[in-house]
Image (cartoon, rainbow, N blue to C red; front, side, top):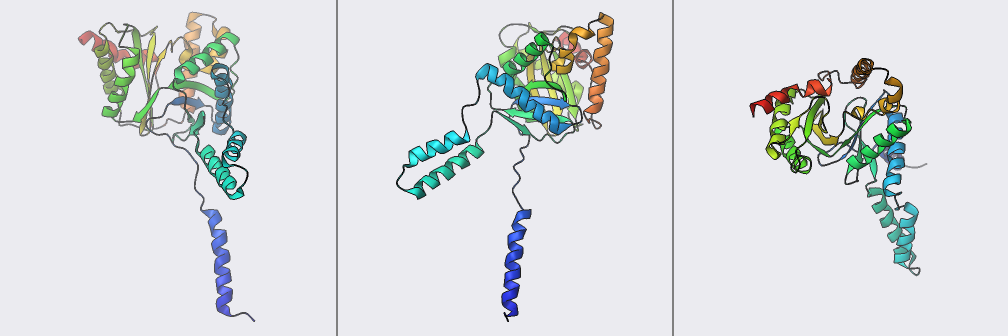
Length: 311
């Protein structure tokens, strides 16, 4: 008969082996400052929306830039080639290292957690997400096919920073140098916030309007047909910024509205009512119960006229 001490050791070792299964590192990615990508609002089903985002973005990215050439098989083959054929240990080590590098490689598109309901952020390694976003909305407008069921809006985001006034102004300053420094243009500011009541609408609009005017005094506010729209989206502790051309013309990058634009254009009055109802419906579905209700771009930028007039 085996001693009791030996039995206890065997039990403890078995317990430790099983215990490892319950503590695994999470590979979940989170929204961080310095990222860029696409802010996507969805219709309740987030998992299906993420899947649609990958399909949509990869489809149009392949059209613009070509498919991603890196693959795990190519990485393994390259590792074997570099390691030689004599020493199997060196080959195995090279393959293992290459696989580790591949797993850590940042993909072209990666879903990251925003901590908000029905609000998804797809991080990208592309230098200019605006070009891809413009290509998507132009193609959907031309073909009338949204290619998505759960995606409502897909807004390209140029910069992500912490949601405090100094960081927002510094990030916006570098961004505005690219968009407002050279030629005068018309602009509007669209501000939304979810699960954050620290950043107020009026102060941020005033500060950003003064910053735009400091870049070029010829910049003017246009509440109806702004050539450039400054999109400010505050999600918890982060602020997402972008300056998008013809944002209002492309229905704020609402893919379903762009696909059905021809059917909705019955009259000017009817189109305005349809847009307002869709906007209110999306705000209700976005889970922003802690945030102030979103308003159209015209209402979001009313205070800018006062700032420009004062200057």
